[in-house]
Length: 65
Image (cartoon, rainbow, N blue to C red; front, side, top):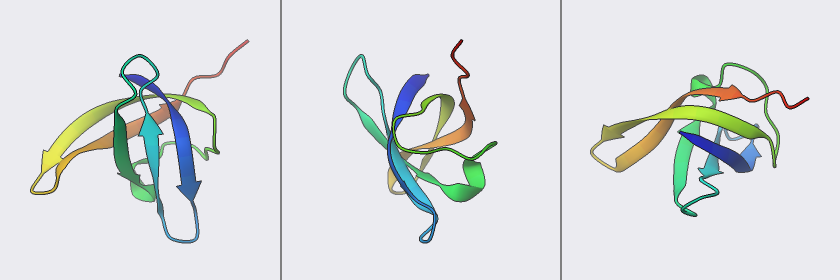
């Protein structure tokens, strides 16, 4: 999937990604980041499910040219 970092709080180790096409938002933990990200960065990611619902994993920035 593709989305943008809605926010990321490094001190607490979590954030949210918003899918631009659908406005869905997915929680993520810092350990799922492949690179450092900041608010507004475009990213690709996969979804995984746990008892709380879907969350983002394998988060990788999309480097725009």
